[in-house]
Image (cartoon, rainbow, N blue to C red):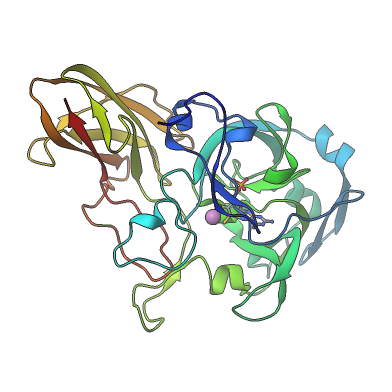
Length: 350
Ligand SMILES: Nc1nc2c(c(=O)[nH]1)N[C@H]1C(S)=C(S)[C@@H](COP(=O)(O)O)O[C@H]1N2
Ligand SMILES: [Mo]
């Protein structure tokens, strides 16, 4: 069936490289580099010498060398990165775009300098509104049909949050090239499009940023044919994924441990409920690890004793400390972001 040992990723597109992590590898708490999902809009950039500028509406423009940044105060945080398109394949009606199943998500330890530290060195002028982050990667988009680099902005209060960092290590080693070497922004609690890889420059602007990766993509469009009531994709929706058993697995009568993860972009997970009878009855799962910052996922498990043969539908529903809970139907939107309906696997018991 599946190769449970040798690491591999499931490819959704070759150029640019988009690959997700098969769900059985997400049982690890810290995802090693070779298993971290990959999401790119352009071919990988080529880099030469490295300097990081901060320019724009600042009192003292900066040009940091890599050595300087490595000497600044640092912090290490365990953060989940989830692509806003994770689970897109499950939307009905179907959505155009990479058909991500449930593996466009990974987590591990990111180490870096708080962005607020760098912004204190540069100063932010009073009229400033947003901070813009540009990556080294660039290429042609179809909509609009022009050359762009990958650029996005953050509101100032998010940029100044003490846990928004300019990361240079992943799992205690330099960030692998594919994941943004030498430096990438890490914005905990936000969908991962905010965590710009291969940082080329930071600029402080005094109006609102409107690049296509922010005003065309990564926007929720609730309507099929017009852009009414659209709003930007920001923080992660409360969500859970069943990792064991796998969907369509054939299992035996007897004792089983159902396992999975739950995560959120607001607060932390407070409980995960499970149903083994397709929603008729619900029980509490056991949360195995609590992290009150809520930047990483929570592992949960449930002991299930099956008495009789047949087909079973297992459902899970996570709730966070903001009392947000997974809906029974996902919020359909034209570009297919933020899927977080109650998770489901079907198994056959023999
Ligand atoms: N420079 C740059 N940063 C980027 C992207 C990109 O294409 N270019 N993709 C974004 C998106 S949509 C996601 S989901 C994450 C993926 O990070 P990973 O490839 O390290 O898993 O990076 C984000 N940062
Ligand atoms: Mo993404």
